[in-house]
Length: 165
Image 1 (spheres, rainbow, N blue to C red):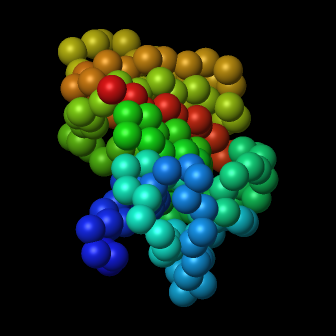
Image 2 (cartoon, rainbow, N blue to C red):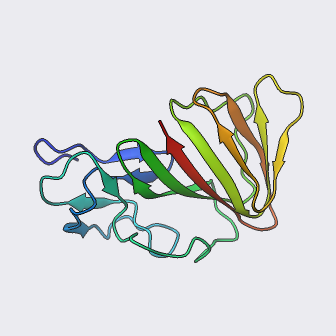
């Protein structure tokens, strides 16, 4: 969906973000697609001519641990803030892992921390996987192939990821 010269909604994994400056907060939320997490909405429209930057509607503040599901059919990704060069995501995993043979190969750098739960990351060319527990973080350079080998099935794993150029 586009509005004249405005950029369309962009999809990243399962989340949606929209691009416009932070002072452009006059928007209308659509109720037709609701996030499975409280306070989140995967479908939104904006008004005004504010291309280039954005944030997720209704997410000016919140709690990263609020409304955590005990199980999800797939990993949940929620954009918390988006700008031209930085994207901040909350990711919730409930036992999910990357498909066999799949490797992330991202065009931007990623700093990611596990806030709750546990995960194991694998990096192409390395023999030892990296286990992450609460408070553990890793910086993944752009195009460094990696995958999620395991996340805790017993409790939600909450990640905070910052993508940057």
